[in-house]
Image 1 (cartoon, rainbow over the protein chains, first blue to last red):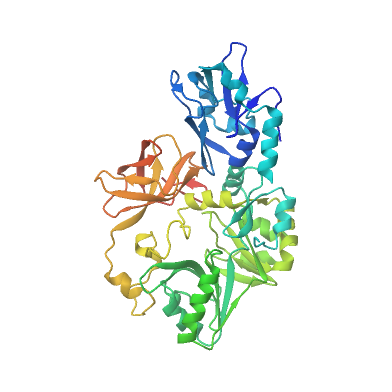
Image 2 (tube, each protein chain N blue to C red):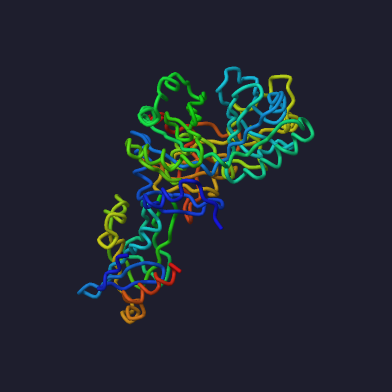
Length: 129
Length: 360
């Protein structure tokens, strides 16, 4: 299972990439993508919306099921990936390239509370048993 | 402990994603459910449907017993090998199961029932037989496997695998069957495409599966089976109907024979119950995915519910079967409550897709 070392993770299977400007990109992990199967619909938050940490703010739907996406950090939505909205299968093709939305964190301190790659891998291992 | 079919090891060898399907360890997909769906619409694919149960009923005058047992009329079965789709009802008109009955001879009829209802069905059929036809032998055939080969090229690929099967089966019409050696070959299916459902001894199933694969038949899982049958507008027991609903409100009036003098279990209830609801097709106009149990709001402000919803790979949009008030007409727009939104959908006559063609 692919768990890139440079990313941060949530227990609800989102990945978080911290950019040079302090903003963060959010997507779903390989584990989540595989569990859901072929993606057919993505609904993203409006740009400008302010999210609380762990607020449900987006939905990805596969042929199998709908899954809520939670904000890994509180902050303002500064961009959304309209390409993924138009072609949800991009998540299946490369879930770490197919980011969903970009946040400007309200409190950068929340980043340190996220799982690192080894912590997330441990979570996956424990869920597998 | 999950039940397994004779093909369990074959699925695992093909990297199937296995799931618990009503107590059976079954393949959901072998990589991509969407690709499996398209493969069957465009070429040929195969499903392991060995979890379904074949039940042989043998003895004198099986036909008379079945006349009273099921809602469709087995007197339509006049040519040996002919099949009939029917519901089996309780006295209140509720659907115990939907099944296919094959007429093989006057002393041998074969039933194929759903996996999840198999035990219940056997109990019900046996108890009815004890009262009405105690001499009949009712035999569940767990010694058999069943493989559905479906798609426009399905039949020719089967012929390339089963020696001498082409001459015997190429003139079969839909809903006809024939025995070829150890194989029971029926021109039936649950996808809206041409093809066969083939019943064979369990110990030969893995070898046959492998030969079909070598002949270019792709394995397909229950995920694709569900989207194919939904596009084909075919009901799924437990979702689109159950014991609390009758066939007249489930889009299955065409399978109920109320015209003949024949009495059958549930007939009296059907004759007196008002028909307030219908099973309708919906095509979503907005973006999103319809799912079962979502609420439908009509222009008349009445309500209904989606019984089966999903993404249609052929239409590339979401479709559904919904139980809605009988007065709603085809062409009307309704709204479906999806999370915090009301999405617009159009009421259509289904099937949505047949033989590769979009019909809505």
